[in-house]
Amino acid sequence: MPWWGWILVGTLLLAGELFVVEADFYLVFLGFAAVAVGVLDLAGLGGPLWLEWLAFAAIAGFSTVFFRQRVYKRLRPAGGDVGNSVVGQFAVVPRELAAGARGQVELRGTAWSARNVGAAALPAGARARVTRVDGLVLEVRAD
Image (cartoon, helix red, strand yellow):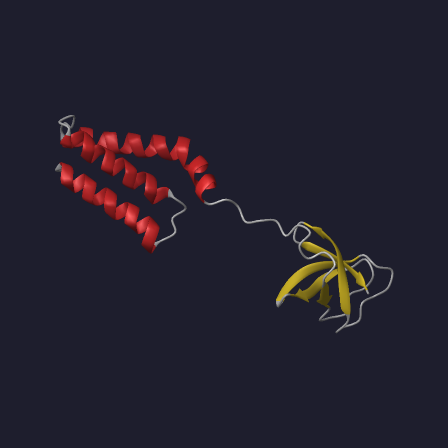
């Protein structure tokens, strides 16, 4: 393949990751490898077609295994924890929630998993105060 073919394929792979599909950053490293082989070929360091494909596979595999996770975490950090942002707010109990039981509540227009940590059952339609967040489970009690 000519040097410009590798660079074209690499550019298309990079654009595909950025604008078309969400491939968890794999296409970025395939695109990088294709562009790198094109640059090597342009610099006169290419070789027979089988060697270019071998270089492409080696660069793509090495960069994916050793750099993808680090780059992905840096550019796309994990979603924030719910933390204490909802503690003290009121949720609505759509169905009765017995004391100590798990169920669902509605808060900010979204259904959440919840655990009634109070001594009394929460009837359907009642408001419950969020006292603590345990992962994605809200601990609630009657207000």
